[in-house]
Image 1 (cartoon, rainbow, N blue to C red):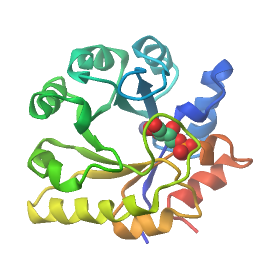
Image 2: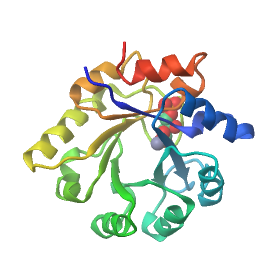
Image 3: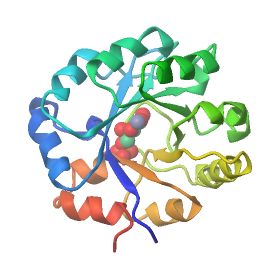
Length: 218
Ligand code: DX5
Ligand code: ZN
């Protein structure tokens, strides 16, 4: 099995020492840093915004994978680009104009991602796949870290892979929520290319071993 990318979710870090926490996962071998932005409207929780991300940009070279769990994200895309996002992922369910939102992200030179919640069928985003650099399958209800992966979401990864193949497209296939070394192999066999992992990396005794195990290296 090939090695996939691991994107530790900063939500599981100790917020009193973010710089040290980021260094820790960078040294552990993670390529992407997953940054969960929540507005208290699209999801019932509030996290952090562009000011925090822009401070972190100064201390890390990692790929900043910004996951916007906010209503009408098109309003803030430029702010997150300025803050240092390498990729911006928006929710299908949060956009009144998905096409315009993904196009606006790409026009800023940022990689565009589209995410679906557990109950949203992948067929609903088929028409937007040509505008996606990343497709993010939520494997938990968005809003909180530390939840258990919802088993029925796993086959959606394979469905995305099939749709991308059908249209001759290539995009990263990312999953988010409740992922650990114990369950990642079934996601990898469905076609996963990027695994988001919060608790499983930041709370690990040995983060290097955790990143290696989640990336599919035995
Ligand atoms: C949930 C977030 C996830 C979450 C992942 O809304 O999008 O990124 O923090 O954390 P774990 O891996 O702990 O489920
Ligand atoms: Zn996330």
